[in-house]
Image (tube, rainbow, N blue to C red; front, side):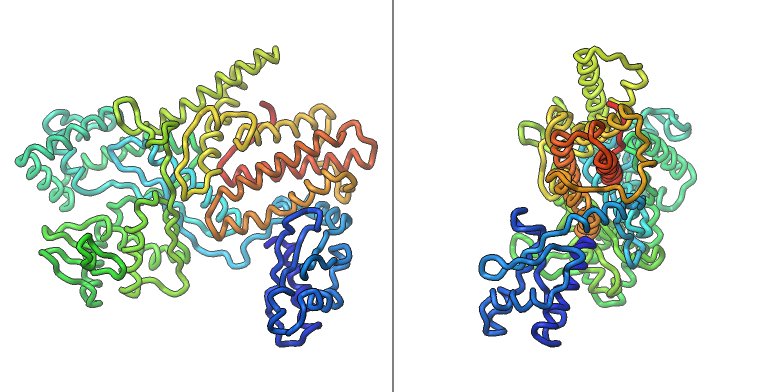
Length: 584
């Protein structure tokens, strides 16, 4: 709820008490944005809900509320419509004062969280010895945007990269490399990441087909867990090799993360099993130690167990996730832990969350949130794959977006007969290409699958990053053309006279409500929708209202609206991880 709505809600609550007595303190006035602008800006629907309780017609109830309602500083005189809706229209003078206030505020009127918390966002999470592919795109981009919004709101955010850097795959890979490329286990950067991935695939094929190799690989895992010097050294080299490649992607996407892989929690796994045993939750089933879950059954309808220690004494993902959860609560002191993974892992999170709650490990003031997302699909509606059937490398996908942005820009410059340096072209192509990929993902409701289309995401029209970047650049074009320094416009300059100015002003003042909703619901597409609508409303204002040619004081007022729009776009896009451009 934005600041204006909050003020109106308080006044309506007071009017309810004044009209009907103290019993009505705390009754929700049901204040919502008006469905049609011709009825005003807000609508209170409480009269309809009180009709039965008060034994009166809703219009009579609405009349009694309005009689006691004092919103004269904010709104025109309230109007009663239909069966008893109370319509409220914001005063132009109030809107002008609000815009003048936020003009001097670097946060544009968005208040920080009243009670900042320690929050953890767990996202990206690639696997060592494998390249990041299109499947890592959504977790990385969505997780980063959520972290940015929480940080902006003043929360103490720990961005964790829970990489897969432990387990059987390392025994398998090290065993194979001992045979075919021992130098890779003793010398840094002896292999590039592509070769490492190729060796990993070959090792997996060998592991699946050769029982003797399988046993040797398992022994190698035992040596790794025991801290054998040569195996540990080899493991560190392989991890570092992958880490360097991940970092190339993170720098390209402007992502900051603290790596804390599965290996970090390895010393804590036995303690998880011991404590579950003490709590009486563990049941032995076919040699494995399990916790049986409520609400989960197998195909036969029998209760489904969550295995925390396998029959051979080994541990699995669930054990590691339980250990990491305890560490994050006890050592990191997190109050909200957000896991950004694909929706296919929903059951896994529901299961280990349930085990942790049954064990009493989750304090009442700690919130666990799984943030699920859908698949990235090709234009054929199927999972994106290479021609050979492999997952598309994330690096290739991003490079292709930048390459296409580069070609589009060159073509546009040619048509406009405009000369620009190669440095300018490369920088614009980089920003546009990466921004287009990020925005195309974030603008979808994350729970849905979406179709990946370079043509659509790079379009200068429609709900795309290039469209909004162009609006931002257009505003800076106005400042260059008029030799205007937006910072020197001064306060108390806004005068709203044209209808498009009023529409734009009202929308600018909704930013706080949007950011607050994303902070709670963790749906970045709501911010995308807001920025797209804002861009459209600015373009309508730009098309219908002269700016540089306007007479004073209208000219300065319209320049202030331009500046506030540009700053709102820049702030909003930065919370999506998107950089802006002053020229395109």
